[in-house]
Image (cartoon, rainbow, N blue to C red; front, side, top):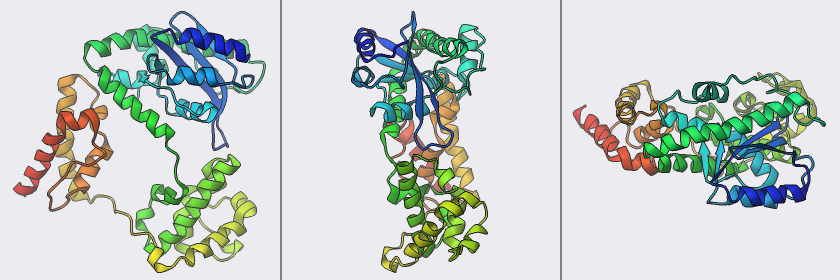
Length: 372
């Protein structure tokens, strides 16, 4: 257990000499916007080290480790772990080797859970009894400590199995490239002014309604961060479009909005009404443009044809097909020219996927368009 700054500095100095470290986190995030770190686990292939984030105050040694390009950081299904590190010390681990992604690269199930992967590769049955326990309590229970240490130990063992297989298949660069995208995504901060673009069903709204939605979504994003309160606890996403469409002008009418939580009306009702009025006062020339509608059902034929290109490459390479071509890649390609073409490769299709099959996808799309 590492709970002193000097001890953390000592061990980080030693870990900097290693080719890799396994990294895991335990955290709480029930009603807060940001995750609260309860424990950081490091595995070096021989032992597990548990870092107490409630006791450490100087994270600079860990930052140096997380950013060192010569030490591979091994994590599993790590999107939330990356958020923990961004909040805790302002950086995300890189270069990153995600064992869930590595398993998919080797043809195992896509999005394979940690326990199932440990069972499949190490033939070890893990207990999930402590998964939902309170990681902010002190002292931690013996069961919590055993559980957390086992995660770090077995994660290192997974890397010892997966790393050589990925290397032998010639997929290391591709995997590190995809993992780097996860790191970049974790470092990106949602701009409040563009938060409305992520609201489901926003494409249904007229520009005047989008002006109201933009004001509401921007406030929700800023306030959630400032209060460290989960977005949906502050104001449920399901209420945003109805609010922008119906534009209630009283607390009584606000409370009748579907899925509107009474707590939101009680705590922020007047502020929400003021925001709606502010959105109504946005001049027409500043209204957002209509958002793109979902692709029509007729486009599914082209999507299926393009998807087969990815499936063929996945089969040839022995990779999980879901990893090869993501839905966002295919939809962006179809949107670039549907229905009449010509089609263009979208920015979303980048890196090794663009090199491997970009021109083939483009040729298939444009050939089909000409045939029809």
